[in-house]
Length: 440
Ligand SMILES: [Zn+2]
Image 1 (spheres, rainbow, N blue to C red):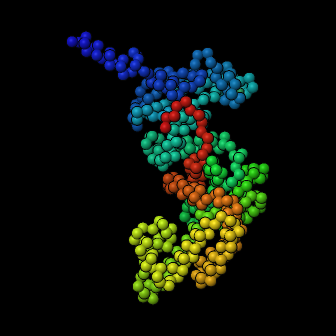
Image 2: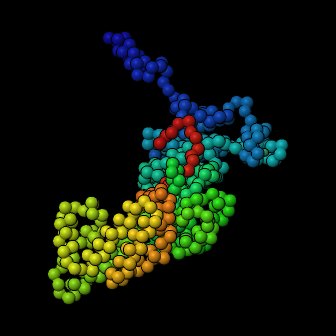
């Protein structure tokens, strides 16, 4: 009976693993995280306050020389540290994993006595590079504090990991072929704290190129200074909103590019004007004791017609019967939608003139103000048709939404530095270090 059981056990073992010997952690590590010139040694348990830690020894491969950290050439060993340094590795089965390594110093012919270069971590970091990349990748999907909680590390470690990845990527990204850019402003804190974001809008490569503090002339100048004059001459199209400092610098720095006022911002501003008219009128009607017929009409007026719910549709139809300021404003907004349908810049321009005249006669102050603004920027708005509608409002709008989401995700730490990192990290489409195995 006993023999029979033994036989079954052996058979099962063979069947499951397909090989006769158990796999060691060392072999797993060699498969997914091989380090050239080094080997994995003993693996042991270490008890700590936070729980068990898997400690893995790393040793130099026999007969290999250490590499000088300055010139990256192999050199003779000068000495070896007594105590091992600890490098945090990706946790395994819920246990923290630490690589232990006794650093060598090498005596380099050119650089003198230097600490050796190790390929799995940066000199100043306690986290292995692969672990930093792992954390940074999760920090794109989760908030930074969630990432820290789940992988039992600190928020600072997550921040440093993202920082390392962003710097790595920014140093290696290719910005040669940028021909279209979009400029946008985003509020990141209450009290007029804005940042300027610049995107690449070329088809096939849309990404965040740059983040700058404030939304001033100096902010924009900083961008152009950083990318250089030669690079700026390659820009053919630039989209922006009507914010004066942007318009000014763009006119000066890239005067040959077609400057387009993007549709998203124009529509947003017009909606704001309509909403002002409606809010003001609602208040007035209430004060004068009229029936509150404008109650709950906000979205009826602001939404595109096809997006209205059935109830909102009925409400709108009902309200449109009255001679109200809000109704006139609404009809002007609807008329402006038609403008975008034109293909010929000439006819679009004719239509725009008509619309401006109508709006100026509307006796609705917010709408008149908007019409004046549109008249002032008529040429830039019509450039959208000259660019053959290539840069639809959806691109800038999409980026705008994603930026706001990213800012919300790094919540609690709304300093510019953190937000800058988070935005490059999630929207920069930056290159990443190649790995033999993706742990995430
Ligand atoms: Zn050297």
